[in-house]
Image (cartoon, rainbow, N blue to C red; front, side, top):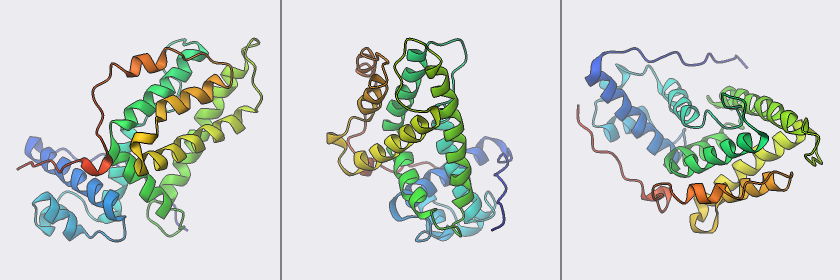
Length: 232
């Protein structure tokens, strides 16, 4: 299969054009999250965004390009997951940064729904997002292995698993929790579950939940997100 190039930056065409592109991306994210990639057409996205088909093509050349840009937006939100933050943080500080990232994901349910739906579809090697997800998981495993190797280096930290294994387990935990949360959000506390994973490795994150309690209220459910009514 031919490797697909990563999307380049969207050209700047002024404030009005930027607002239109944001509206297109918002509409694509909502429709892809709801129905999947293959069931949604560019005409569907254009109509949802209040544009003509030709108007949408003025900003994005095709549906595959649009999908990758939407997924890249999710990466911007989720960019800190398991990447070591700047500064000389303690192992507890690194772990808290991961828990905090999961808490931020809870506040972007549309992006979480998109990720869960499209990542499942992308298991098909012919799916346009297949290479994107292969590379994304490789990157997450690499960052996670480095993070856990640093935690392992602490002589006083009991650690039962190899760093690479722990990284894979954390990724699987986060992905599985996201699916459960989308299905039954009131029953799943994703940040608490991830914090418990770290606590089982000997890291004390007892103050993490208290920090989350000060965050803004969260959406009740991904399906409750309304469409933003924007105009050019």
